[in-house]
Image 1 (cartoon, one colour):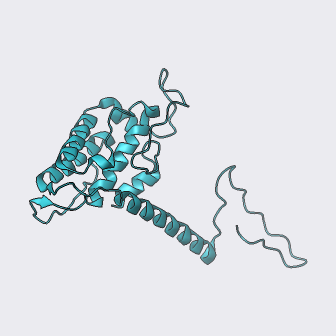
Image 2 (cartoon, one colour):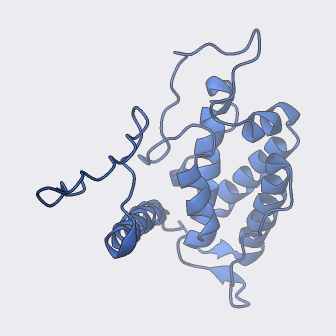
Image 3 (cartoon, helix red, strand yellow):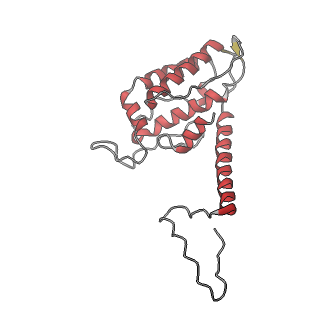
Length: 211
């Protein structure tokens, strides 16, 4: 909260700052102090996104046996294609350097694991939860080539689902269409203990864009 300011004795009181909108944040002060406050707020948001990213990356399971690098790359390519279809535009690709290896004996790189999990979480929430249970992959299932192939298959089906693409492209606060899902429907279970969201929120988008 900004400090109270008082006019010198005998001087006219300064004009009051406009009151913030009901339920909205207080306006930032102008000048160096306001700039410092904005910088601290931005840094706090970045720290929050970084912590969330690291927590999701840590949930990547250790492979039961080394992945085939070809299977990992197929999953990455399929993810990129599906994201373009669901987003309705050409989005930046996820890229992972597998260093020319034939086998990958480590957990999936965060660059693909985190956005993959985030996408499946978002799909569970869009359209009032109408797609929950239709496309599901838990992090624990991504521990071998079979799990990666299953995830790629789910991604392909998602990319061909016109209703899902429409739901993913609908703003969060858009009014529901007549006959659509009512509020208060069943809440899907979170994946891997990570926090669930509505359709891609600004936080989810920032998380995926900063990878």
